[in-house]
Every structure is written in C-alpha cells, then in structure tokens.
Image (cartoon, rainbow, N blue to C red; front, side, top):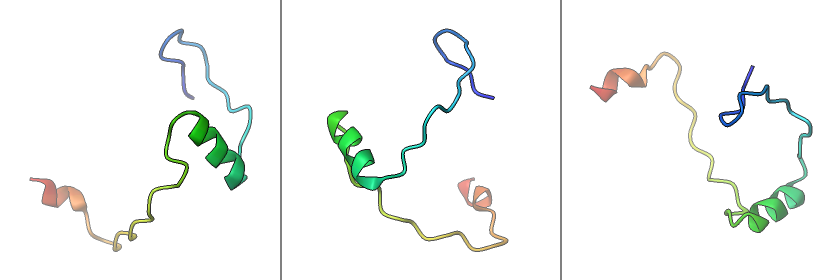
Length: 54
C-alpha cells in the first residue's frame, strides 16, 4: 500500500491510461518528453550486478 507524502492518506489508482497518444499529450502538457526512453537490454540470468558495485 502506498501513502501520500504530504497528508499520509492512502493512495489508490483511479485510472490507467494506456493509449499512447493520450499519454504523449499529457506529457507534453506537463513539459515532459512525450517519447518513452529507449529500451535497455535485459540482464542475463544468474548475474548479480550488485557484486560489480564495490
């Protein structure tokens, strides 16, 4: 469960926007890049990248 950082109230999903043109229009209106970031390659199974962080 998620809570509002301002008032502590419970957050609920009230809508899911799945149509790409609608999402792009909302992002443009908010001054955000309307295009999604490029897809990255999937990690290989069995490799723990946390081991490389040290």
